[in-house]
Length: 109
Image (cartoon, rainbow, N blue to C red; front, side, top):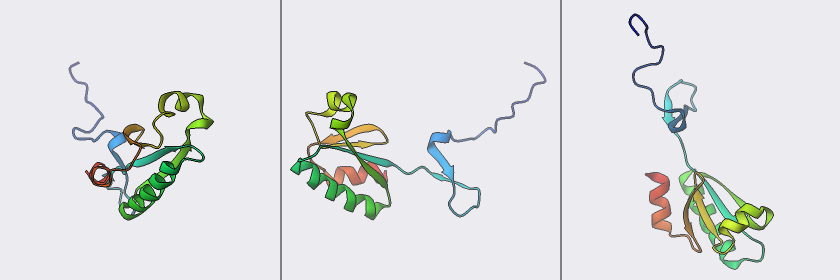
């Protein structure tokens, strides 16, 4: 439409790729990843994966949490036969064991 100006800046990153800077400068910084480890009780592989995820995420300053697949029928149906399952930003990254080089590459790339 002629004579109409867009109020949107010409070069703006999508909100899912940025968040406000920590130093209050207003500058945008890349969004950090979030790791979810899907586990169940009495799972020795889950305990090993939890230790690996805790160490790697601490070293890389990446947030993470666990979720019990047996507490949610949808999670149990989708992932119950593959625990532990590693999700990065809600997307499946791997299962049964942590592949450390691959996980580090996904979290730093």
